[in-house]
Length: 312
Image (cartoon, rainbow, N blue to C red; front, top):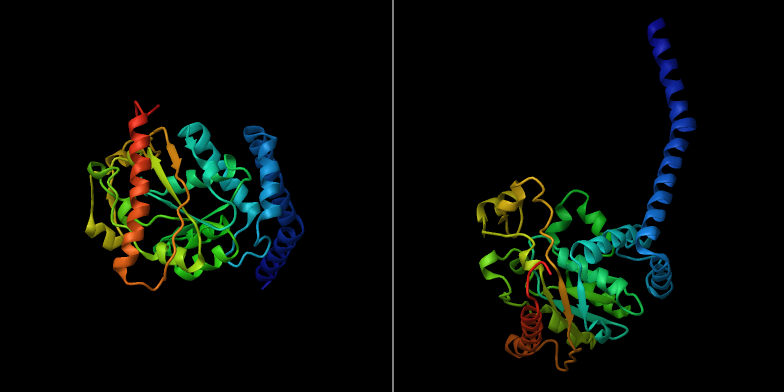
């Protein structure tokens, strides 16, 4: 019995140490790490970074009680990471961002690259290059919510499951909502099909008609080449519960997990405004969707004709 009592006393002391000593130390360590990260972000991005964050916080309609779980305090670190890819790694050139109107807007872009870095960079452009800076709310695939930690992280940095109810609510709060009408079909297209747009869904157009929201077409040049997909495996997609499973040899090469340092070019088009009944037959909606698709194809053609190399 004595060893047992000694063990209990030792456990009690350990618990008191954890609660009285260890946890405050952990909190101090976390606070220190945040201070270091904040200092590094400011040093890397300049004082303008904090000024833009402040402007977003003042203008953002749903802070601090965002129903989708967005936390600006968490998102700032994602924005800092996005800045690295936007400014340093992909060296993004942004054209026509001044065309994005104030208030509610649907940003409609082509989708590619195997992982959604194109959305990441569009969000960075809207924060760092738009005046005033904007937070973009991307519509993400439902299946991403099944991935460990990913769903929670997406929520905290402002991404929202792509269902009409969520998008409608965001637009009612005058937000900028990013949608990729090609969906998973676009992001996972093989390299041989680069810059060939897949079929667009119709939901974004019905939403624009219902909420009287302008659409800004976006053409992203560069993401198609960041990972070379030689094909998709339907079997592996079923095993992992994914819409598609791309086969990317690059991922099996040391260091190949990083995307190739392609130069991104993002072209924002003129706002498009549509009128009509959101409950129209598909054929009537498809005619309007074709206008948006054509605009994006034009932006892609312009961007591709202007570049002399995929790396510069």
